[in-house]
Amino acid sequence: MSLNEIWEAASASPYSPLLSKDHQFFVGFSLLLSALVLTGLFGLNRSFLSIASFGIPASFAFGHAFTSPPASSIINLSVLTVLSVPLAICTDKNLRAMANTEPIFSAVSSNAHQLYTLLQCIGFVPKATVQITPDGIRFSAEETRVIQGLAFLDKALFTSYTFNPPKNPNNEANDADDHDNTTDAAYYPCFVVSLSALLETLKIFGINDASSGSFSRAVSVQPPNPSASSAFTSPALLLDRSCTIQYSHEGAPLSITLSETGVKTTCDLTTYEPEDTDTDIPFQRDGIVLKIIMRSAWLHNAITELGATDPTVLKLSASATREPFFALSGSGGPLSESTVEFSIEQQNQNQSKGPSPTHKVLTDDDSRARAKRAKLAPTVTETFLVSPPSSMGSRINQNYRFSMIQKAARAMAVANKVSIRGDRQGVLSLQFMIEFDNNGHGGMRASGASTGGTVTFVDFRFVPLLDDDDVDLEMD
Image (tube, rainbow, N blue to C red; front, top):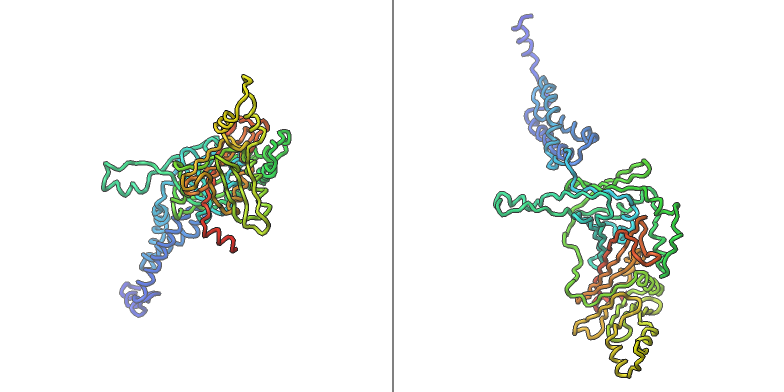
């Protein structure tokens, strides 16, 4: 058959495309839009599974959007399939994280129980704000802007601590306008994670709440028996368990890797941007009117005793001139009011009135002068400073919601000492000192002395109740 005959035979059966000209633009635009969406999804989640879920469909969408005749669609589609997958990868703005670059933060702890104990002290809310600093990791948990718990995981708790601070993104926008005056100062990454999920991750190998033993022992102020710890107790079994925390880049999940006797488990916790970076309850360090340092067990005992009457308000009273020098009262409950007073032992007062080493009998005036110069402080306190402003008189009286104070009970139980501070605005700060020995145990020591372990701090801040709040509590 000649070429002319073929031409005439083809004219009798013209080619009809599958889509008419009126619909080709709409279909092509839809394919192009879906290809861009799939490319963005693939850039956000780069894995082998996402290649099959997003990468290959995006390639086919790009191919069919730009191929016109069916005869050349296979060639064009094969070319675009090869080119579109690298294009989807390159569109991700976090391409640097895919390369073999160092992560922003990486730390290794040889004892996961220490991290679990500290974070459980502020585990009264499901989420916490995390800030990575060169000196450690700062966890902040707050509830209704009334209570805030701050736990600081010092870098001394980790056997390896690496922090590569990224550049401040706010400075990048100013580089083009004022390159000479803009400094490449680093900033500390801040994000929000699920605190409850983090605690569950740290005990994924079956950590028994070893701090619960200290929680119950703290009811008695007697030091725990050192022989009670053996090789079969939970803290001893946790010594060979290591924990690796890694934060690769901005927006990446917080990776927690736990390894024990050859078994390794990795959990990636989703990170969120904080809604408000300035969430700390303000505390005036230059306006402190109350500072008391004492053993944490004494405070825990007092709160436990007051909690038996189920009060709604905790009343704090302190004075440096008259008794009761330091008292805690619970009121507003369905039962009755109760008060715990920390006073001076009468024996110490009698000893101050005894004869001097020269056996000189003191007169009444000398005794009163000596008693006035003596430090009037409760016996259980190590530091007792009360300096109320003139508007308060000679006594400090503040009210706080008792249920909020109880949220710090776990920190009271595991801590060695507590620093009770109050500022002029009435904000109460309970700073707990928790010391871990070389075996990872926390809490009081049998000898009462330091064992050369790591000292960490957990800080709680409470906003006082106003008069209107007291009325509302009584109505409830």
